[in-house]
Image 1 (tube, helix red, strand yellow):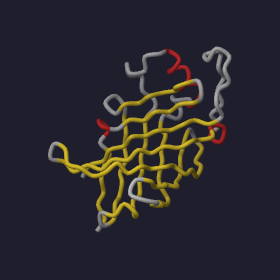
Image 2 (cartoon, rainbow, N blue to C red):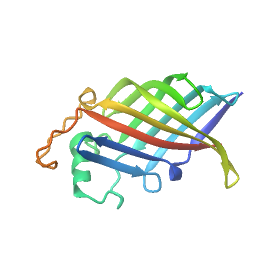
Image 3 (cartoon, one colour):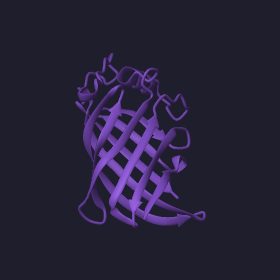
Image 4 (tube, rainbow, N blue to C red):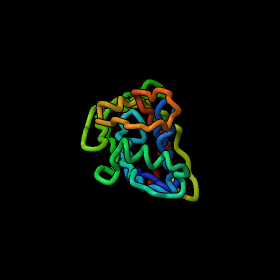
Length: 173
């Protein structure tokens, strides 16, 4: 029996960063998350995950002007506000270490990526059954056309070629 869990955006967050620069921290209380995880027969081996994130957010949680400039420089948020991921395969190594392979779309580019997924667990909170994952991975920004035209935001330090994505996602029935 397949169970579909939907994302609890108030309990989810995403951090996107490059060396020498935190691009954006997006907390669920001020950002739009959408997604679900399907788990077959309560076995994590058969999980599939899909999530999308609206990065076109001007919330107060972005306290530095650099964040707005970097989001606009990198992502062109007005034309491409959604980052999305849809898993195509799942590999369980042990209870906590798993790999999702899937299609990541940033701007208008979709590439296959492999992300690490730590299964945090299943619990009940406020009468709702919840499941949580921490999904992490490195993304080669140039694969997605994420060129950065910095005007010395970083004091002359070289920005990384990879971006780190850290998503703490909580789903409920």
